[in-house]
Amino acid sequence: MDINVGDKLIMKKAHPCGSKTFYVLRTGMDLKIKCEGCGHEIMSPRLKIEKRIKQIINSEK
Image (cartoon, rainbow, N blue to C red; front, top):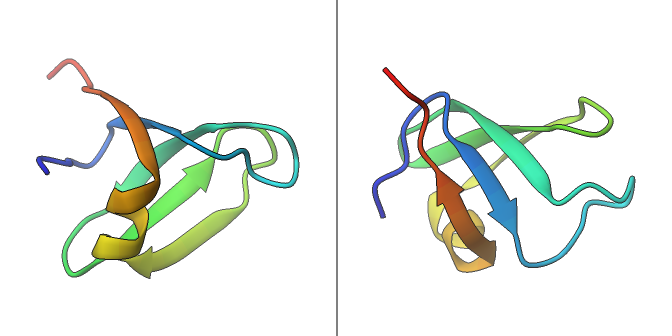
């Protein structure tokens, strides 16, 4: 998957706060994403996050 810093991810399942949208803060072997609802930052392996993505909204650069 082509995931870049600044992209918005819509996940299949919601975060405990109720939001399904996350912003990408860092890429590589691990992805660092930030919940749009509560601002919680999560760092997790790329494969784990890629399986949970429903849609990627690319940032305009």
